[in-house]
Length: 56
Image (cartoon, rainbow, N blue to C red; front, side, top):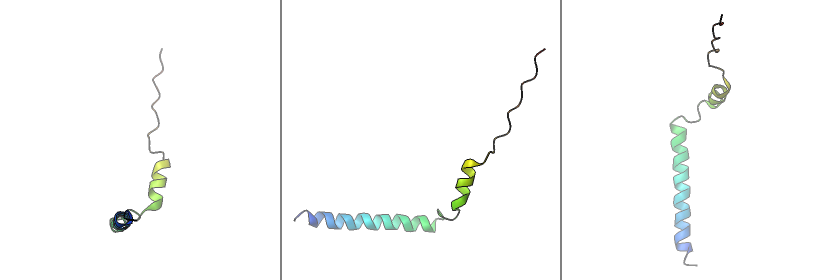
């Protein structure tokens, strides 16, 4: 039972740290554009490959 004296405050601190990290991510705009990253991952922005000149 003495371990609860350590584990309960530790669990509360970790929970508050997670909540603080989540609130920070909300304020910094991490969730503003949810679809943009998905479209950028599949977008084909590479230029087409150049064809090699024909050899004679």
